[in-house]
Amino acid sequence: NSKKANQERLSLEKRKEKLTSKTNDQLRGLLAGIQISSGLNKSELIDSILANSNSLKRLFLEEKRDVLLTKTNQELRSMLKKPDKVSRLTKTQLVDLILSQD
Image (cartoon, rainbow, N blue to C red; front, side):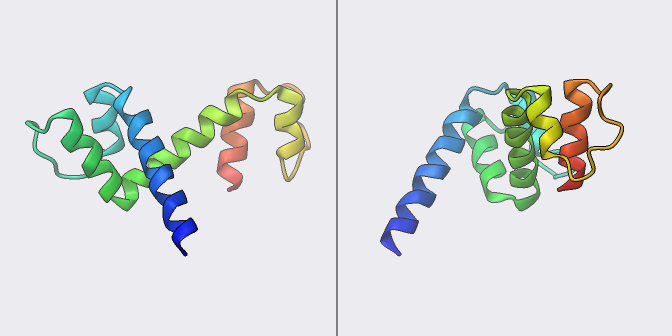
């Protein structure tokens, strides 16, 4: 149980570190649809993202997209559940298709 708590803490620290590199506008984008004060500083925006499940889902999706974009088109095609008619798709289209299947 202690090991799991440590892993969750490390994961949270990594997310905070990644969020710190984003601009305030990018952070506000993760909070889209949520009523927030325009006067929040970066640290407050990050805390708001980490405390909101919808914002966390957007963050997870963004992280997954970034990982998928590092893969080759062949690797992406192999991840598709229905690999029919995908030979002409661009990498971005393949990533979008994979994300839509999840």
